[in-house]
Image 1 (cartoon, one colour):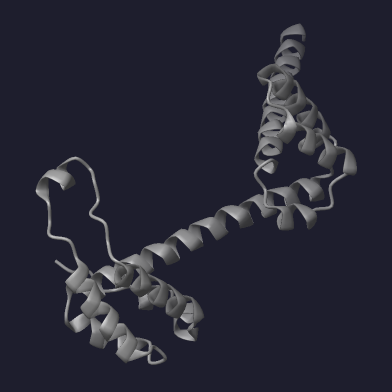
Image 2 (cartoon, helix red, strand yellow):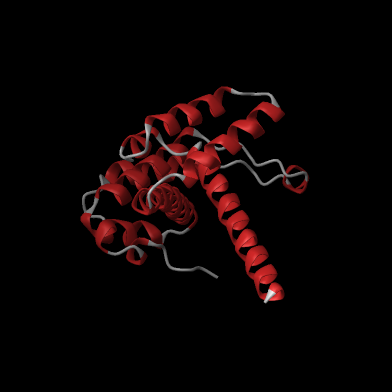
Length: 196
């Protein structure tokens, strides 16, 4: 009987320690949560104050102790509140991933529009609301402004400086991708086809 008690005591203690560590890490993630998402959470004022204090503390040991206190307060939260905290953090992470994906799509389209003659026709066909004359002029200017490839600079990791038209094409493409219903309806449809 004593071995069963010994096993149960230490396994439950290990489980509690693991749960405590997880909640402290969750509290640390709350430090990075956007204000609008944090305001939507129903967490005690004491936890909000503890998180605000943790943001201000710069001393390593002081911050460590403060985060232990945050972990203690996290352990006192109701399961529903913990679920809401996890959902808010997940929403923040997904939003960042979607923004990154949208930026990559805009970069791909910009590069394709400048590099390939047939890309312009594909773009105008998919995004009829685009000012075709302005886009054509920007593409022409970006091609003129394109710096000659300097193999030495590229080998040293220095990217060639691009002109204003290059950046304006990116802005135009990003706005179109973000504002059209087609882009919202089908995530994969607005990606440029792979080129060899």
